[in-house]
Length: 70
Image (tube, rainbow, N blue to C red):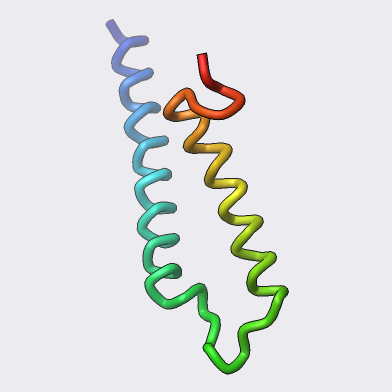
């Protein structure tokens, strides 16, 4: 029983890490990733493309899509 509780505690700690990261990302997105319209360049586009690709890897894994499809 203790191992099961330890696993649950570890799971909830990891979930909390993810929730915090998602909240921070949402806040950054709401602020347009700290980019100002007059300063947008292709580097900003590349950065967002990189973030999107990393998030796609996560969502593909979480939802069994893309290369993780069954």
